[in-house]
Length: 260
Image (cartoon, rainbow, N blue to C red; front, side, top):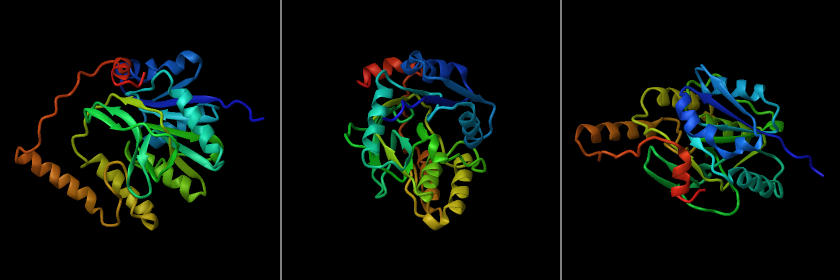
């Protein structure tokens, strides 16, 4: 009989109020799941590896501070893990929103930054080639760690999935909806572009790699097309102004959209 798995949650933290309103308010913490908040780190890789070392959990859940995990989220994750292990004991990474190898998006979450619910309910776990960073579930026994040379806080979900695949492990998305109480992404220039360039070099032998935002390619054309189109739309006044929901606690949103 398999022993009960220990779970732990890690987050990179730079806003205590956002943390308190969202991730820290998630019901799983009332059930004894430990939390490690990593502060003052300059990249996701540094923060998450420090968090990995700070817990002895078998299953480590790396989540954004602005993510709320609804009441039955842990049970949904556990159900997904059981379904995966019935057919694949080599899994290493699980996400809640990602991209299948053919480029199709799969998952279910609500995004404040986009002002809508993404995806829909699905039954069986799906194998993927990239995941969104909002939630990354890592199986400690896989031996995987985050790349501390990847700059900033972008594309590390894609990176950890590709590292899993390159080492003979697998990665999945399971149906476990979350609230992402995020701010909108204004531009992919700057920090995102820096991470994109690093990933192009690191995984050049595996390109193209579809991500939840733009595809990684040898030339980087999809990124520059996205940046140029967005800037032109802004200059020409073609981008409709999105009315953002006031940023507050995640739980009422989860109840409103039917996740809780």
